[in-house]
Length: 278
Ligand code: ADP
Ligand code: C5P
Ligand code: MG
Image 1 (cartoon, rainbow, N blue to C red):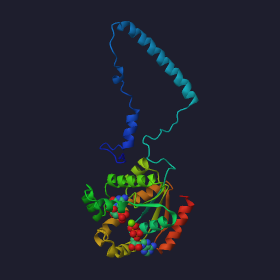
Image 2 (image 1 turned 90 degrees about the horizontal axis):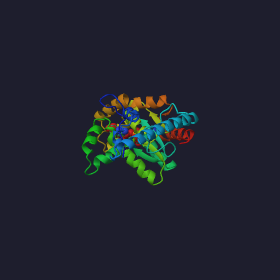
Image 3 (image 1 turned 45 degrees about the vertical axis):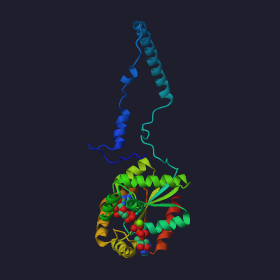
């Protein structure tokens, strides 16, 4: 099951910090001290003390020699295991403002290079329409307001889709429109898989606006209207750009200008994928 928690608790501690504390807490041994009482308790008590003394001395000696041979690493091992260790799958995040052309470019990569395309927005819209979904109304209202749906919902949809495809032998994923917020980025990379890199489509706002209004004529989307588009632009700048900045500091962003014809953009997309051997 998915463990969610990159967000901080009421004390400002991330789950990773909490688990580290738990891991460092000395084990409570009271439950291990039970024993059956016997009539010659005094005698056996003495034997137990001698036995424990020998055990402690032996263990100490063993530790001294073992640690000499195997010095401890100064780096703590990861406390939470990812579903997919590095190398098991390849994940490329595809980001850019609304209407920058993420879906268009991903569709071309699927056709030519056999990637699996998972659009977080598409998964949310599917879940919204699914009969009996407990999240339907919540998703609809977040999408209309251009706000980021709580990460628990989006990450579990992605987690399931990745695992389903992986079980069919798929290993290369384009995760489109995700992560749109820092908590999504941290949780995904902590619990599912590390991203190989992020393809980021740079596009002037007026170009995206024109494209979205045009798309809105036929898309049937509740958020391809001027009011929602304005809110989506604001969310993109305030909430999603910090994710790009974060990955850029890690040297994991490839920026591509996308206010050019589809095929020109695609040529650059292919080039960046080849250069990162993804
Ligand atoms: P996103 O997934 O980033 O929101 P889309 O791929 O759905 O964007 O593209 C938004 C609209 O712009 C679509 O109608 C699409 O056909 C059009 N479009 C995409 N890329 C280009 C491009 N390079 N030049 C012109 N129109 C484009
Ligand atoms: O990517 P797309 O434009 O299809 O996303 C539509 C909407 O879905 C976003 O404006 C947002 O409300 C929601 N979304 C989200 N978290 C994501 C991706 C999309 O909340 N990672
Ligand atoms: Mg899209």
